[in-house]
Length: 99
Image (cartoon, rainbow, N blue to C red; front, side, top):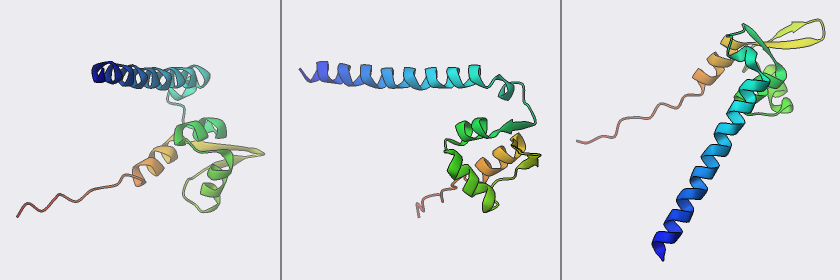
């Protein structure tokens, strides 16, 4: 009986991963410019990449966490700035002391 439950859990995890992949494919279809390595992206694409909402990215702009370009009324984000921000969020773990 536990084998059936394990199988059901595995199928549910697989279903979750398939949903995740579908979401990524939809994102790429919606924002193909990211695949073409555009230099600048709009706010919607930046929010999708960073997995934050418009208000959160607004706060990140105001605090200087992320660079942006203001051109007339449009706000763009250099893709390099997005990468730089993500790189700054990497958590480095200390090696465990084995001695």
